[in-house]
Length: 174
Image (cartoon, rainbow, N blue to C red; front, side, top):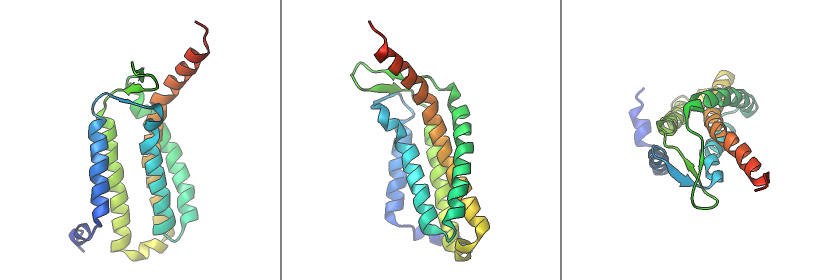
């Protein structure tokens, strides 16, 4: 069975989402100013997309959600390690903004995460019997959680030290 017909029948919104995510990843190659909360956009986005897929694509969401949690915990540790070489967040001259250093890690992970989600979903549509397979539900949840966990680990790796330093800075008398 060819994968090409599935690619042709992919809804346009999926390709628009892919272009948007690629744009975010390309922007992440360069230092950029942002509000601290924007650091959490991709981890939250992929978490919600993963939960949506689990609850709408397969017949054993409870197994898949359990494995998603396990995958996320492992992914957080991996993401934390991968991002350890990244420079810390810096304060911007603009109040309320930070500067995040550019990195190719974000773009690479976006491509991997999107591709994985696309392949998992395409596999279900090419082999509908997998919707009911417990083993596929376990794999779906584990992989979805793992990739999202990497986003969380990387984000926490740069955010937590900045947050601790920021809290200390705000509570230290001048």
